[in-house]
Image (cartoon, rainbow, N blue to C red; front, side, top):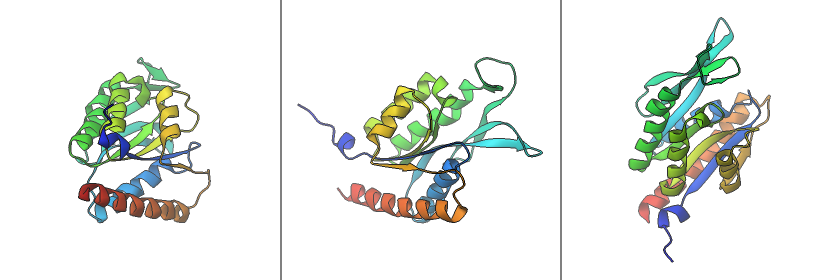
Length: 194
């Protein structure tokens, strides 16, 4: 029987919680703190796009390059989730490429978010599965109510599952991010020394 060493040493940090609880804020803070302590990161972050205080869509950002593209916007084009048209080609151009690049660079893989829009892309699902089998450390946010098998798998296999609550203060989110980034930093350095 052959056991892949990388599979055994993967640390998976999963952040979940209801909409508006601070998942993206927390993962951004973790990414910033890891960068400050010299830990290489890669992957993607999604965020809301607002105009005049009204949400009009979402964007997807490559955390290594800073390149971003719309993830979804108000519209009638298919595929759609609610009132948003989802741009699968942009998920693959930014999200999939950034995840695969992070894996290839042996970086900490940041995946925000494993949610309904991103899961419309088969290539996105495959890139997350590849990260699970080949990465040392993954930090992911997972949609709170998703029953997609990948979302369930991430919650089930998490080394640490952090469930945020709506109304958490910025201080609480920063404290969680500080604790996790310190733990991730130690794990990353230990894995490099192995």
